[in-house]
Amino acid sequence: MQDTHVLISGGGIAGLSLALTLHQVGVPCTVYEAVPELRPLGVGINLQPNAVRELYDLGFAQADLDAVGVPAREWALVGRNGNDIYAEPRGLLAGYNWPQYAVHRGQLQMMLLNAVRNRLGADAVQTGARVTGYAQDAEGVSVTITDPQGNTRTERGSLLVAADGLHSPIRAQMHPDQPPIQWGGAVLWRGVTRAKPIRTGSSFVGLGTHKHRMVIYPISHTDADGMATINWIAEQTFDNSAGWEGDWNKKVSAEDFVHHFEGWDFDWLDVPALIRGADEVYEYPMIDREPVPTWVDGRVALMGDAAHVMYPTGSNGASQAIIDARVIGAEMVAHGAGPQAFSAYDARLCGPVSQLILRNRGAGPFGMLNIVDERCGGAFDNINDVFPAEERAEFMAGYKAAAGFAIETLNAAPPTIAPGARVAA
Image: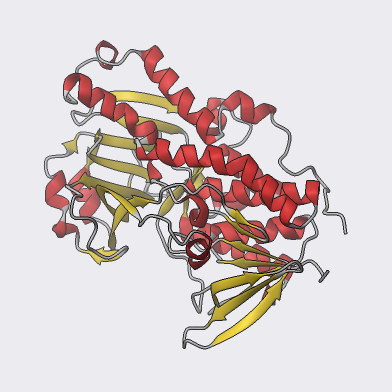
């Protein structure tokens, strides 16, 4: 059998986390990325404590994460009238052994990329190289790689991992009859604005109703003037009977949609001003894919959004991608760097994460807004009269357990990969 060498399709958070994990456990790999140059694109994302733990175990420190984001202190839902529905501390303040971070996605990717190049070598990530198909036999996997000019070549490895996102051609080959991308009707407009943070100074705030809301949180530390980079997401739900007909990621003007949020002006937040303060705004549909029965085909595995793209309502898409990488590494330590490790990874995560996709489609933790809307139309003076505190706490506990970051469970869990663990030669 040929020497072990894992081919990774995709140089995003998932693929780079896997490359670092494989290097840590002694498995050679190469990352193939479609774009000619990786740049720090994107806006804000959240890293849950379970993912931050894994980054620490990969050798990153608090200072590294502080350079690309800020520890989250609070998660809160606020009704359209400005009254609190639910609020809780997050990260260390909540009792986790690890913080939760709100980070700039592109800067996190650059942090991972620099680490891969420093640890694995400058050639470990090959850009302008899109993996467009695969063939496998008893000895390994051959992949077709296409460059930006349309030229193709073949590379050979022992295993292939698809970390190539929503439009993964590897997933399409593995599941040729998969349903089309599912759009539930929500449109997101996303931007970042320099402004003063609200509430604790590092709060994740969902404001509005289940079909019409804002999500707001800082992704940088404050400067001398008390200003920070504020990530915001404006969301409006429309009739989806005709399906999505726009671009998947389109730059738009704030004036195209800010009218949906006129009047959202409180003594602690001016939403229209926040929206208009962004230099750039992008429009996305809120989409996911139907879960598939398996993420594995012999020597080929899916991970990250290629495996389980999900609604961002749970703020755990990037976190789950990092967890995927670490579980793949752990199963290689347990079973060797071969198909048996992929089978164990699939058995461990595919079913539970598929359920998480469906839970997020049902609004994830934002489902509390649905309940409030059903019970009082979204208007209330005292939330306890509508949605008792015990019921709210139970709702959130159920979501955290499903997403893998229940406090007691996570704090008590051993490391995913034991320190110093290596894959047997």
